[in-house]
Length: 209
Image (cartoon, rainbow, N blue to C red; front, side, top):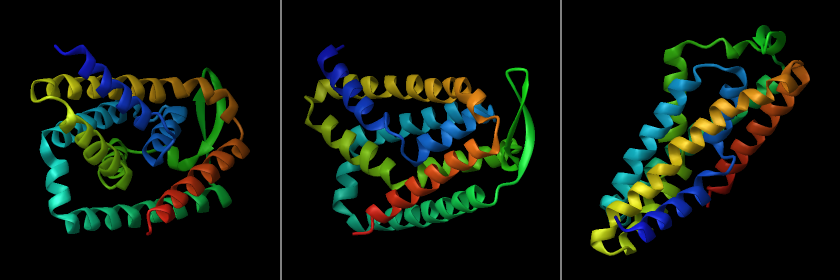
């Protein structure tokens, strides 16, 4: 294996994925609530594997050839992000509450935390596949960078990028429970939801150009 190409892929993926974007904010919130974290980590990781493989395999060139396809995906994703951002801000302004056991102690959390497995799966897929940043970062940036590697080194580059995804999502999802003691009060959830909603709307607005 070409370890230089492997390290290039790992470093690039780490620089793109370790940011609090819309997907990561969702994983963080679910992790704090300990709500279906395993499903979320697996879905996010598998989705990244598919996108990285497609990007390095040539999907970036396809997207550059058909820019209208990129535009359709972009605006569909922006519409979803705008809807989610406004919904999250509404929840921060007028939250509902339930009780969840956190490390043996009761903690107040928004009632939306009591989610079915299927609803969490669908939301995770939406945040991954309708997120325009995913296509820009993973398909275009990682795909383009992988295309610059020598042909025999592209697999190593892709594997390096793929190594980061499970490590990051597992750390974010399962590590978020360490923050649970800070979220025993509704105020903390309102602040988190307000920050997430504002960030998601900012991301959507920033892409309107």
